[in-house]
Amino acid sequence: MEVVHCDKRPTDEMSPSDTPGRTRRQPAISNDRQNSIGALRLILAVLVVYTHACYLGGFGPELLLVWSHNTITAGTVAVQGFFVISGWLVCRSWRNNPSLGPFLWNRFLRLAPAFWICLVITAFVFTPMLWSHHDRGLVSFFSLSPSPAGYVWHNLVLPRSQLTVGPFPSGGLQPGDWNGSLWTLSYEGACYLMVAALGLLGLVTRWRGLGTTLIITLLTLHIVAAFLPADLAPRTLLRLYDTPGKLLTLHFLAGAAWAAWPESSSGLLWSPWVAIALMMTLAMSWHFPVHPWLSPILFPLALLGLARRPELADFEQRVGGDYSYGVYLYGYPVQQILAEFQVHRLGLFAYFAISLLLAFGCALVSWRLVEKPALLWKTAKWIARPVAA
Image (cartoon, rainbow, N blue to C red):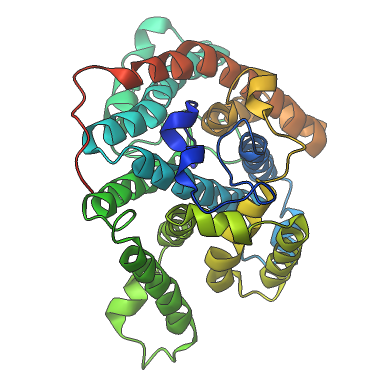
């Protein structure tokens, strides 16, 4: 999932001065005020809510799942897109300020506070709502096992270590899981640490050619592993790509590779028609399907190309904030509550629309009261000074 997401200070994630080779005809993707990244992230979050609506509401396979012969959903595509954008933004963040302390602190502020508050809200607001729906006493609520406090504590560092509070959620079509969206956060955090390691080794700055070569090698080996006969493929090679989370990591690294060469991305990602053609090719790969091998290569080009479009530039400033992370965090538990109250019986459109509206409301509160205030701590004076990379 941050979820993939960036800080809002242009000088942190993306700096126009980081693109020395660009021209006026080919402006680089410089910051959220000059591109459509904010709009793209919100669209991706909405796709995640849509996929979960189909699943949690029991409406059968969604259109993309049918088109891809049950190999990928719109939500999966959205999460891959989040990781592409996150890889690009986070790598740019390191290039603009190659300092381990500030880098890790900024990543922590963007990911953890909103997530932790979501855990608290789920355990001590959402769960009591379902508890009271069953006409049970408040005192016995705190004796639930697994406990509400345990839900918060166990998931603080390792999301999805505890899936429920007592038996809740229990009344929907997919009981026993409060927030299926959280599985991506561990991979997101691991990717942050990966960029920090690459940065400390100078592989995204001084030795970026070597760093990019390593990423290209991983992408190439992924394709080789896919087409080698099972009896010939080394087991170690297959283990590099044997989970959905590892595929997300490849998308993240591909986005980071483009960020390491801002002057090149400025020149190559110049045409919206190229981005559209790449998206159409990717859509065809979902159908056949060869998308697990093509997506880490095609999707970053397509998505970053679309991000250059000026139509939705300054999007987050227009709507007053970045709500994509909040929509991603709260969409799933909101849909579980609605399913408990049988809202899904109104049909897919109503269930999806109501859940999206409520998730957006939660995201609005999260941005105003948690995420935006947390970002003010980015400039804490105790953070370590920059180190050479």
